[in-house]
Amino acid sequence: MTRILSSLLLLTTLSPATSFQPTTVWRSASSKPHHHPSSLQMTDVTVFGGTGFLGSRVCKLLVSRGASSVTSISKSGSVPKWCKDEEWTSKVQWKSVDLLSSGNEAAIDEACGSPTAVVSCVGVVGTDFDLLKRGNGDSNVNAFASAKRGGKLKRAVYVSVGAEVDACKENWLPEFFKGYFQGKIMGENAAIDSVGDYAKNVCLVKPTFIYGGSEFGLLPPRVNFQYGSAVEELLFLPPFKFLADITPGLIKVALRPPVCVDSVAAACAKAALDESGDLPTTLDGTEQINKYAKQPDSTGLTDALAWTREKLGEFYNWAKVEVPKALDSIQSKLDEAKK
Image (cartoon, rainbow, N blue to C red):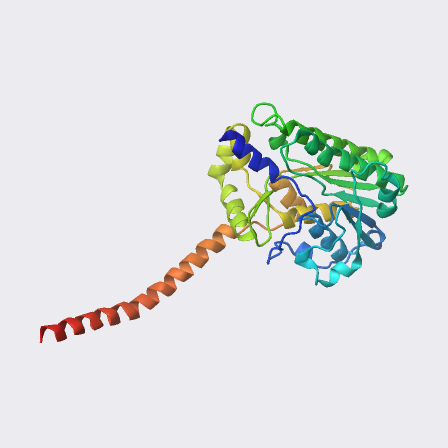
């Protein structure tokens, strides 16, 4: 049971280039167009894994926040189904390239161009050690190396994995998951190396369980916005926080609040364009990600309770009228039967 739970928890930390339906409600006003300093508008951003569940939302926010150009790189190169009819997609260059194809360096460089900022949401799921290491490690090494060769890179953002999940790798997880963690470490080191003298301009975003969209999924495990938002609000309550603080391993991870995909995307987009001079080098866990992205508190549980109260009220009002009618009808039929 522990191994099954561990596999489900870890698979959710990835953001592979898979198309999902969008959440119907963006949690943060930061997803709307903003006015930004002109220096930000001169930022050319390349998003690796830009057609995925997370990466496509990063692209959307980068466009709305005024990046001068946004390039999405993925194996498919196709506009995701959830946003194919949205206007912002015409402002993104959707390019296809295989980051793991041998001898493909020139093709990767051509697709990547010379960005001033890069965001990588690349990751894979599976049960094979080599697949996990290559998909999470080698792919990101190749991606960041290409961005570095462009010669203009000053900002690197990488979606890694939460420290509390990483802490489970020795005693709680199947052996093959070591490939996953080794790959993530390779990705982090590649992101740091890519900016060289700009080492303080790296932001490692480290979520645990990412939820969002309008659908549930199995691979990777995904819960929709309404359900995930309710769980997030519930697990932020003090009793659950206390339990998470004192429990070990994957039990601790399971009791931590999940994070909305919109929050992670907002943090990535903000980090790519952030010129405040105070860029965080690490955003570890839901609380730090939400705070940096300026996300409001999740209200999924409150909304669900309000909806339930409303429906119960409607049922009560209906019952006050209809139940007496039904009883009168039954009594009338009984009276007729006695005649």
